[in-house]
Length: 324
Ligand code: DP6
Image 1 (cartoon, rainbow, N blue to C red):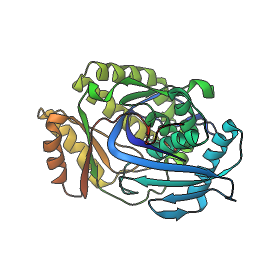
Image 2 (cartoon, rainbow, N blue to C red):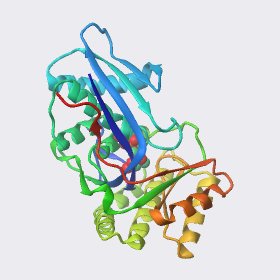
Image 3 (cartoon, helix red, strand yellow):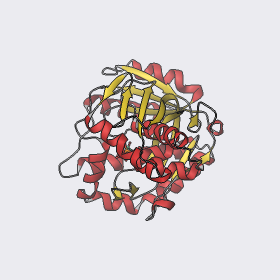
Image 4 (cartoon, rainbow, N blue to C red):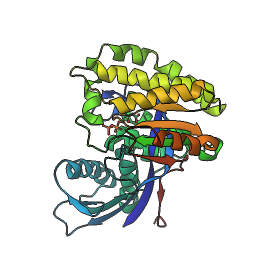
């Protein structure tokens, strides 16, 4: 039996579209920051007396799609370990489901680490990251700590994430402005499938290396202005692809747009803050720690904002018990 904890992450350069759907090999690289305090803790116990895998999520027994996705991922890990025992999986999030914070990243990172350890596999960080990727692409980025890059590649062995700077490198804060807690109609997995139906995806891919390099350099130099420019540009490009997919994916609401306009106005007034948005209406406001309280208060005061959560840069996925 093993227990692991992983943080969620927020992408600055987004993952949207796969070159190989089964292996979750993305069309472009991506860059993210782990989110401390927005965690999944997962315990895995393989048990020869179980007929099927069982999954308890925040205390509730899961069946159907959620269980199937976890079982499929465990099958891969069982094949690596060379046995067929079913598992009992218990998982808890520190953030509520539907709070607009991606849970598949922390969930599959924690599941991968706990299951591999419980299976007696002693894997390095790179192999854990590429294994987590098979469960959920963004989970590959929740395995290493701090500021992370995930490499796009044609082969499974070459597509993994690694740290480009440790959490203490830059005191950036993610102030998440939550405007909706509803479950989205089309999730990320379905969205990745639609990405190639937008004619704009080709342009987005063609410009990806430039954005990745600019974002990486801005992080390494702690250059907030350069960071803000490329992060907002990348998020808008992904949403332009979403909005022009067939069928169209429009995740924004009027509250989302109000936050976008607010972030741009605050920055024009001299406040170092920028926005990014995932596959949903909630807005992530990135700002240096010294400004986080002000940004959180200003965001909370806007109409439509239900609540705000803040997260500092987080460390790597880790085991909570000594590995065997
Ligand atoms: C918009 O990793 O959730 O958050 O691989 O199908 O699980 P699956 O997709 P997922 O996609 C994340 C999409 C995104 C952008 C990002 O995090 O890079």
